[in-house]
Structures are given as structure tokens and as C-alpha cells.
Length: 321
Image 1 (spheres, helix red, strand yellow):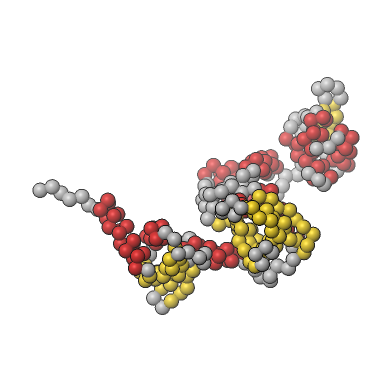
Image 2: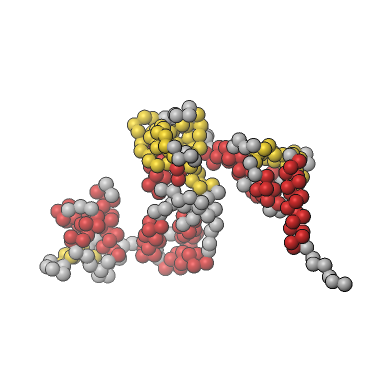
């Protein structure tokens, strides 16, 4: 909390959440000395908030009993959006976000009128959102740092750990951050590699803003770029499959890493590549529409073998004579 206004509001929040709190404890929780705390209390009183001060060993500060700040005004629809956002945030793989999420929930519970509060409570108890089940924890502080550098268009200085564990230092112009398939990705221009790159946030060991400005390409779509990047990663075996469906449904059902799709006269053409044909075959078999493997022949054979294995395991048992 570096700004005085933020600290004043923090004092108000603490006073609202407790019947009474000692001056030393309140100053420590806000991160200021006692003299500065008294100045913040005076600021709140100037705003019309009645605060009493009890002297002595068991004294402290408290808001006059019965005083209520005007409630935050949210419609049921707005309260629903807030609650769903908090529920979704729990699945985004941010290692230190849980306490902040619970704190926000507690603040909403205290200040919302009864009707929106019931809406939020009902959603919290009955709704579960599948956000991809985070496969790697990401640092929430890093996420904030990188998103701020993207907003102000200032190059970030990174320490990045590659898949083999080697650490490199690089300057990076952050164009956007994307959560996809259980991971956070940072998309932008890498000065070390002199081109567009996608980095995994859980591999960023350190990030800080520099004073160097950059220009973000007009209309750049970080999510679309990540989809293309995952679909076109160089792998050992090229794949081509005809999907008997429409383009919108194909893109909805396929993982981005499976490949790129385009509409054709017979349906949708899927072009990709694979290192493991068994994995690729299983991804195809979970699709809710027919498909035809055009290449390679080994993939066609792998799909056929998996189908035969499933038929043997789950087919109707033979009756004895």
C-alpha cells in the first residue's frame, strides 16, 4: 500500500470489520507509524465517518455503533457477474490469489444489500466453473507486473527458465497475457529472439518494468496468436484429417494444440502435427462427429487399433453354448 488514499481506505475497511482495534495494531496492519495513523483517522472524520477513540490499556479506535456507510448498489445481474468472476478466479492457477479472493468475497458480503447478497451466496454454494484445471501455478505478482507493462507500453526485463532449465535474461514487449488449457502465457516481442514469442508465465523467474517505451501492433489479438502458435508447433509427424462438421463446432471441440482448421467442401480440414500418434488418435476419438484420417497411414492404423481394443473391452459378451 504505497498511496495515502489506499491506506486511508484500508483503515476504514479494518474499522468496519472489527468492533474495536488498538492504535498500535491498526498502524502495524496498515504499515504506518502512530502519528500518520492519527492523520488518517482525522481524514476519515473529515469525510463524515464518526470514529471514537478510547484511551488506556484496552482502548483503541472504533466506528460509532449504528453508523452504516451507504451500501454499494448492484443489481442482481451485476452481483451475479461479480460472483461468477470470483468463482472462476479460483481456477486460474495463481498461487497466492486465494486469500485475496476470500477478502473480496468478505467485503462484498459486508456491504451488499440483502437481495444481491443472497444471489452471490446461492451461486457460491451451487455453481462450479471448469476453467481448465491449472496445470502449473503462476505468480500473481508477476501477472500484475507484466499486465501493467503492457498497459503503459513499457518494455519488461525478464529472467526466463527454458524447458531444459537454462536461465536467460531478455527484454520483452508484452502485448497480452492469455490463460489457455490450464496455463498462463505471455505473448509479445522478444528482443533476445528478435521476433514474436510466447512464454509460459510459470517459467518467468523475475520481471520488472524498464523505462523504454514500445509500440504494440494495432489490433493485435494475443489469444488468436497463441492459438496459432500452439497449433503450429513443429512436431515430428504431419497430420491431415477431414472432420464431418462445420468450422465453428470443430474449433469449439478441438484443443488448440491439435492443429489449424479451415472450411472445405466436405466439411472441415484439420492440419497439424504430432510427436505421439496414440495421443493424437485419442483426441480424435473423443470428438462428437465423424472424421476421416487422410494422413499419415500410421495414424489411421492407430485409430483402428484403439477402436478394436475398445470393442473387445466393452462389446457384448458372448453367450456360452
